[in-house]
Figure 1 (cartoon, rainbow, N blue to C red):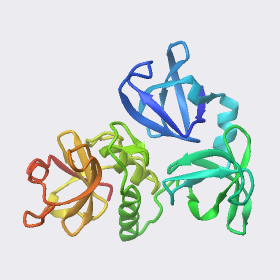
Figure 2 (cartoon, one colour):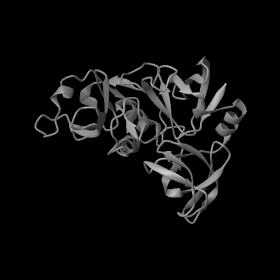
Figure 3 (cartoon, rainbow, N blue to C red):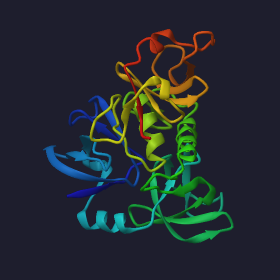
Length: 272
């Protein structure tokens, strides 16, 4: 059985209660596979990036046929703003049908007109978004040129500047370290493991630190960051004083050097 996420941000939890630990967030329009129902009104699900957890049935449209129809439609992803309002009319005075986060998925209807794009929502309603907010939903790497793809990964990670730290978070409302790195890759058409370590059945492999280039990943005990070039890396950290997206240096003479991280790198990972 499949289902579609029908809320802006769906909490993927460790147990069937809203008070459970947040493990991940599944975003609007993503299709998930239902594995079982561990309690009334709750489902254990698997995402398309193969992460599992428990969600409230209230957050899903549980319908195999609807999910198949949705999967077959063309898709756009909200990329270029933290959030956007889906409006009832192609003008800013339209009333708000939904407010969706970066990473949310919608289906385009027709062609853009005067900067607006008509879109289809999961529940069958149609609304309007500024075309500039949307990008094609990539199902393969956005470029076959390595340097272009590396820069695209860095650019995607940097979209989350200003986002505070949220354990298990994966949206501009709050994001954790592996949420940041996995979303940067996801927005570039690459599915990597959502947690802070290398898993062999995902497309990140270990490389020597001397070979690191922009877009590669730095792993620490329980933490992951993206290398952005010139000895610097971005990450989302709960460290007091940072509390979210920040950029640090691997170079000891730099003022934002963090010895506690540089001295405890466990692996460097690369898609390339």
